[in-house]
Image 1 (cartoon, rainbow, N blue to C red):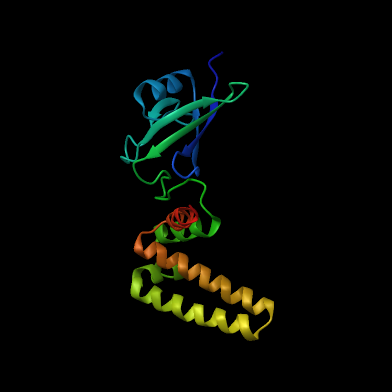
Image 2: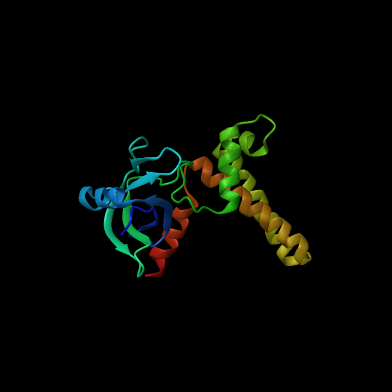
Amino acid sequence: MSEQLRAAIVQDDDTGRVLMLGWMDEEALALTRSSGLVHFFSRSRQQLWQKGETSGNALHVVEVTLDCDEDAILVRARADGPTCHDGSTSCFTPWLWRKILQREALAAPESYVASSLTSGTAFLARKVGEEAVETVVAALSEDDDRFVSEAADLWFHLLMLLRSRGVDPADLEDELRRREK
């Protein structure tokens, strides 16, 4: 096979969740197989790199599989910590969670997200309680538009509460999967 880059999809071995997509050339693939740690080829830096070499959040290889055409790679791995540079379990996080992380990082004083997170867990827990009551009232006595609006507020504030506690929404999904067994 010629020296080409192949898409490498990294999947959590325990949950099946897609963690990230990177690019591998033959050398990155060989290093990944021989070292047991995931390596990629950086297209922007034009060099090899090991996932986690700066963050400490390495990906430990469980299995490497090529697709039928050998032009894509699936890596099943176990992560030492968050895979995404933004601190999320996966680089494929829901839009709203990504927005919360972005606004937290900007820390603009006029940002509702940043100021709410700064206000702390107790503040956000009260907001979740308030929004939960408003959602229940809307579900029982208001039209669908109002119910959707209140449910969106509840969802948003629950995600903010998770962030204030340092809990990734993926942890909730993992808990629900455990309960299914």
